[in-house]
Image: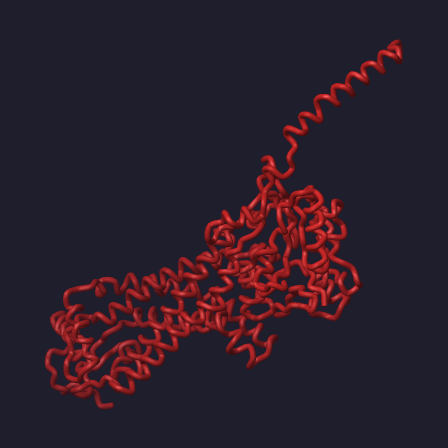
Length: 198
Length: 336
């Protein structure tokens, strides 16, 4: 069984935000929620790099570990998903997430954030695959259709890679070998170092 | 249209030559894609504890500018490993201590028996404030414990959906009852601070173990003895810490900083566990631990003999003020 991951080759990212836009459009993500975002490090300085970041679908995911109602689950592909029916909007997953992935529809106080929303790796949620109920809560289920996440598929410079973790890591290593430099596999150490096999 | 083609060619050639000579040279000098490039592992290694890798974003959410915050994993480990240990030791430990204390020492009795003469100890407003705070505290404590440990202890009993509904209601109760609780703590602070300043008498009381260890030996105390002063300051200081930390959790967009929120949740959880353990002891000594003690907060009136044994100096003060019966003869017993 493949263990799917994201990998952003920051040396190729041109900060076009197409991944962000594609994600928003594919899942009809509400205003104010960003399942994916592009962060530019050392902006305007020599050697600045942009990294497209979303949920990294961690091994031993911190969000899942701290959720008071245990609404998270990991699929056989290693995708970390959650149930909006169980979520109480407490915000714990946001405190635990190393990547700022959990998003909330409301900025209301008194803990009224609403149900958490995050990147699903285009794999929907606990509802039956590709149903309107699933789409309304979690967006499109591209994985069920045999497609990869739209963000990576859309990436014009092929900076953002999605797929079997072993394969995309190999692609990245080949690129680094060939061009002689690489700024790193952003987030991998933090997301997957809990298990050597990832 | 009078420029000859040959002139144009010459200009083009000159420009091309210019590029050929200058540009590659300049490029070789300045264009090194990797020399100053940001490296993830260098950034990660340079991070201090609790720090995060941040950058610039084009969306209007300041918290989204954090790219990687490895501290989230430490917070996870705190929730999963340290907190159950802290909470377990504090709560189960205190419960065990109280059970052992009850088994060894037994109830603290009123040695001279009930006199039947009542003395007002807490006026109705004081009792109202106490019970307002106490009711809120119990619901806050139970819903808080449910957030921390309900997943392990209660979820398997009810199933995911029922437990989620229960916890959602608990969260709403926790968020809204925080306000009457904070009010209660503030009012208690104002009305009882005058009787709770530490004094020399408290040392005597502590040295003699509050008179709880041996029968018939009661160190003198004014309105509040050192133990009661202790619980007063635990409630005031603990309540203040819970209020400040809880305030940021109620209004998470106030600090708008995940590191700050992690810090406040840890303060909230640890102080909460210790607070609950202390209140457990308070509930014990106010109910089953001591005969005659509950009346103080129940009806507000305590028995004169209880008051004399536990708060001898306070009884004297009340007598001097004319609030207490001077004689100890039980002639004024109402026919009940």
